[in-house]
Image (cartoon, rainbow, N blue to C red):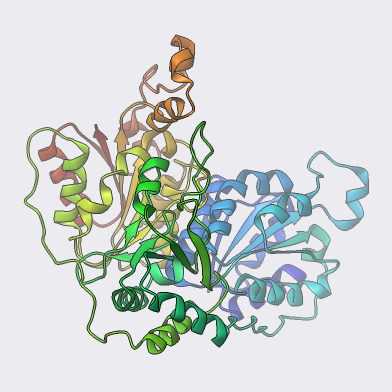
Length: 516
C-alpha cells in the first residue's frame, strides 16, 4: 500500500465518500488509487473553481465533508474563489492539493510555489505531509479538522513522493472537538434583556435558518419578548417554503437594510455577526444597525445555537404554540411577457416538494424571496462570501449529494460565465439540475454599484462598455449544448413555463436561457 492508497482508504473509512477533482501530474498516484477504493465517488470537474464549489454545495446539503483534489499551487489558486465562499458558509471540506516530491522542491520547477501561503486565507487547518507513513494520519486529522464546529476547509498538501512511497495502512477516524455550549450566565443575561420589552432584533445565522424547528424556536422567543427575528443576508442554507416560518432577510442595499433595522435599541446575535454592508459607499454607514443600538451575543457561530435557544425559551417561558408559517399558495402560472416576476412566479408554481435552489441570480433575484415563500418546502443556497461563480457548481454538488431531489440553479448570465464548466459535470453525472440563466446581457449589478459609489456622473462610453455583455451577445443555448446539457431559449412567460415543466419532468440536466 502506498501513501495515496492509505489516504483514500482513510478518507472513505472516515465518512468522506465523494471527491471532486481536477488532477495533474503530481496527483496521478491518488487518481490510480481510486481503483483501490472503488466505493469512493470520484467526480471530474473541468476547472478547479467548479470542484471547490461542488464540494461546498455537497457539504451544505449533507453536513459532511467531500474531498477536493487540486493540482499544485496554481490549481489551488483557481479554486480559491469558491473556497472563500465555503469558508464563509462554514462548509466542511477536505481540500487535498498535490505538490512536487519533497526532494524536487529545491530546484524551483515551474509549478513550485508557496501552497501553504495560498491555502491559509481560506482554510481553518493546513498541513503538509512529510512522508508516506504520515499521510493516513494526516488524512484522518484533516477530516476531524474539517468537522470542527461550525465547519471549515482543511487543506492537506500531498507531495508526490508521499503519495507513491510505501505506507503502513489507513488510519482510524479521529473525533472532531464537540461544539461549545453557551454559558448559563449569558443565557440568563439575554433573558433579562428581553424581559425589558425594549425594541429588539434577534439576528439569526445559519444554525437557525437551515432548520425549521430551530427557526420556529427563535420565533417563539421573539413572540414572548415582543422582538423581531431577522436573518443574515448570505445564509449558507435556508429552510423555507410552505409550513415553515418566514424569516425576514437583511437586504443587500444599505438603505433598505438600515430601514429594516431602524428603531432597534438592541441587536441580539444568534449564530450571527454584527451586521455590516457588503461594501463601503460614500456617505453611507458601514454598520447597518442604528448607531445607538447595543449589540449583545447569545451564541457565536461555533457554539451550540439550538441548545442556547432551547434554554432561553425555558428561561422566558416562551409560548409553546407554533409560530405562524408560510401557507401553501401556488400562484397561477404566468402568461405573456417574460419578466423577472413571471420567472420566479413560475418557479413557485411548479417547484416540486423538497427541491433545492442554488441562487446566484444577483440583481435578477431581488424579488425572489417574496415571490417564492409560498412554494412547497425547499432549501435555498446563497452566495455566502460574495465571490462570483458559485451558483452552477454549488447546484452541481448539491445534486450529487441529493440525487433524489430536484435542483434549480438560478443564475445571472455574467456570473454564470465564471464557472460554466459545471454544466459538463452535470451532463457527465446525469444530474437533475434545471439551470435558469437570466440573460440581461450585462453586469447589471455593476451598473447599480457605479451609481452607489457616485461614479455614474463621470461614466462615459468606455466605462459603460465594461458592464455590457452584448458585443458579442452570449449564446447560452450553444454554450450549454457544447457542454452536453440540452438547452432551450425562452422569450415569453409561456415558453418559460413549458421549459421549466420539461426540466422537472425529464431526468438529467437542462438549461433555460431566459431572455429578460
